[in-house]
Image (tube, rainbow, N blue to C red):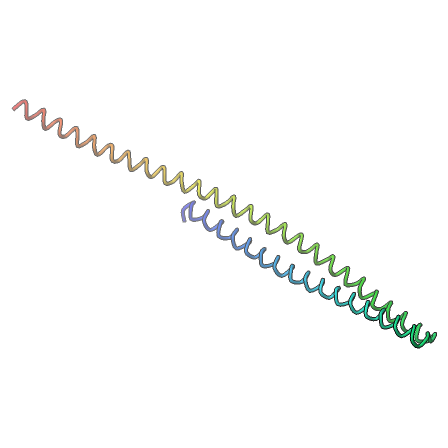
Length: 156
């Protein structure tokens, strides 16, 4: 396998790595979106529970046992919201890290492609020079034969 073929394989592997990083980023973004949606649902539920409690407490009074259960219920919702906030922050961190991996992989692919392109241009230039040299040598050989034939024709 030639150096350029090896280099092309390296570019291909880097491209695959970049594509894998993009896939991971997409997954991380979906998971973040789901965590945000769950947090939104919890907040909506907590707000609705507060509204129900406010309406109920103003219309029918406050029973101490019911107040106790409501507070416990709201503590559980707040605990779930705290937990969900932790999950959401973790997902945000994952997205940020994965995005950094994508950027690094993009830089790698771009750099490797540029390097491979330069190597290919150098090979093409070398081949062109060799072909030009061969053409020049052939032209010189033809010219020398013609000159010798002409010189011999003048001597005869």
